[in-house]
Image (tube, rainbow, N blue to C red; front, side, top):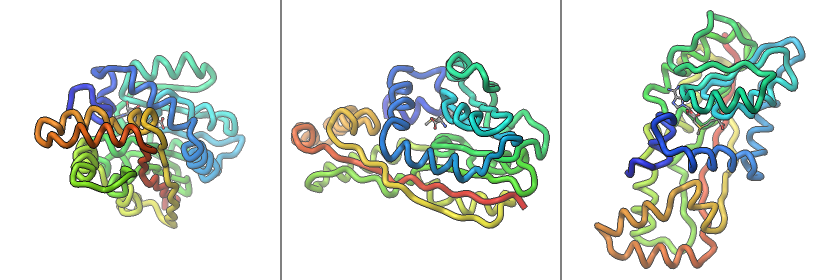
Length: 256
Ligand SMILES: C[S@@+](CC[C@H](N)C(=O)[O-])C[C@H]1O[C@@H](n2cnc3c(N)ncnc32)[C@H](O)[C@@H]1O
């Protein structure tokens, strides 16, 4: 795991190299599958012209702007000051605050909908964050989590022991790689009922895209210190279709 790894960087963006983080944040919503699961999540929030909505760990704030287009008040919080400054500059009509997801700076039962997207995978205590989300949601409000489950991560091409190690090493860079499958339990424990779940496959194709999202080059080079075959594997992968992908799970329910 290098200091510049995306997955480590997302835990504390203000201390990380920003370039890859920004490219990743911009790229996922531009993918067909990224656009699809985000559009579906927005629909599931059930926002109305009078409602107030919160996006926890909002990054650049683009989802906050999409919420604001269909509700009265849209708020985004993130622990990164750098990302919140950028969100404010991109979306002047929305509210943003620097805050940790495990201590949300809002009174109980403030929002008619609360969401988190691809961030529980990075936090120290996902159960605490989901409890906070439920706390600031009104009774009957939708609480929604969209997260990958890295137990479903695959790298295309012929499967070899090197592929297996590269998959394994990448998955283990996450704090909470299997949080996708845990979402329903986390919501239940936080007092969110009537839960449903959907999944969307998030595929990459071609070396540039797969490497941008899954850091395959850096992982293979690091592994080559232990398994010299990793460099030949990387060369073959780069010259092939270079596909990869992960399942994105969206789980939502209503605060009881
Ligand atoms: C993969 S990005 C997702 C951003 C955004 N939700 C999106 O869909 O583009 C993860 C975000 O979680 C934020 N983050 C990580 N740990 C956090 C924490 N403890 N509290 C608040 N935000 C956190 C990061 O700063 C980053 O913006």
